[in-house]
Each structure stands twice: as structure tokens, then as C-alpha cells.
Image (cartoon, rainbow, N blue to C red):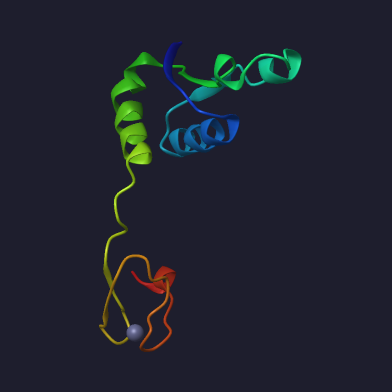
Length: 104
Ligand SMILES: [Zn+2]
């Protein structure tokens, strides 16, 4: 077991843990219940932590977290139907209404 990172709140910790698990990094969230048990403590004393089970996952996990914490712009995409070039934030082609998840 190795502590990977502490998150600002449980919501973020849960999100990060899910992404890590999806990538094959086994991890768990600690301090999950301390906040409820010690309700008077300020939130920053009970930040949830993400621990990884296998040290060999440390590099991959660190890279994943870096990407999560510094979100880049979504990649531009080309509509598979009409070949329109679209900005990453657009989910749907403005030209022919093809949605992005239909590509590929
Ligand atoms: Zn289109």
C-alpha cells in the first residue's frame, strides 16, 4: 500500500479512484468516514486520500492524476458523416447533427 494523493473532497477522490480503477490501478479511498465520525474538524483535516495497492502502479497512477488535475481542451474532431471539422467542446455536428460518440 502506498499513499498516492489526498483529494479536496470525497467527490473528487471518488472520481479519481474510479478513473484509476478503470485504468487497471487498484486503489482505495481512506479517511472516507472520518469526516462523519469527527464532524467538528475542519474539512482540510479529513481530506480523503487515495492509496494504491501495488507500488508498481505508482508511475501510471501519477500520470493519470496529472492529466485529471490539469484538464486540457478536448480534442477537435471531424464529423464522420459530412467531414466537418469541429471543436472539441461541441458534442454534435452543427452541420448534420451527427453526435460525437458515433464517430470511429
Ligand atoms: Zn456532420
